[in-house]
Image (cartoon, rainbow, N blue to C red; front, side, top):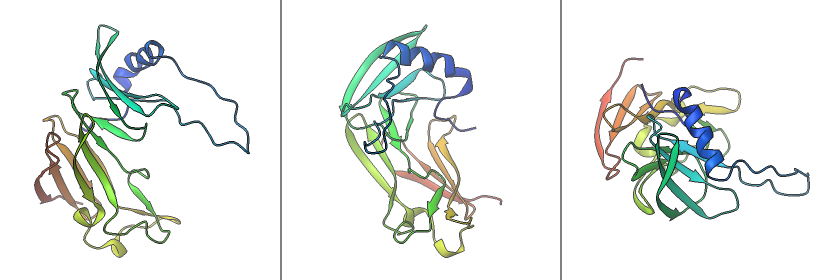
Length: 188
């Protein structure tokens, strides 16, 4: 229902994109050295647009994929992280590092914690905090070390960005502005 980082049907196109854009760099890992930031390629659900964050470079680049060819669209300052890409090749959303989980460490479940950031190329459009999505953090389902706050999030077929929480609520956002379009109760 929602887009994934690399949909299985577009895995070959994303792999081809990696080869075209420089392939995967392999580094020797040593305990006394920081790890190299991994190569990141995130594609829209259709696989038509892919955001590339090469390691050791402070830029993100958007490419349009057509017939196995990657055509550059734009480059913006930024680093590889967890992003979801809209179907227009202009907008993307930075998603939380723990995805649907929060560690139980102090400060991790702070209502002011930024969970999502909406972008249009290099321009930040809006931020969404944990407090805007979750009403009662202590009541969230717990694992041994984490709190589960989300059921799912991503781009819906209509292009809107949808977040479903463990509190049985669904939020809809406009990826072109980052504005919240609605909130509704959903069944457990």
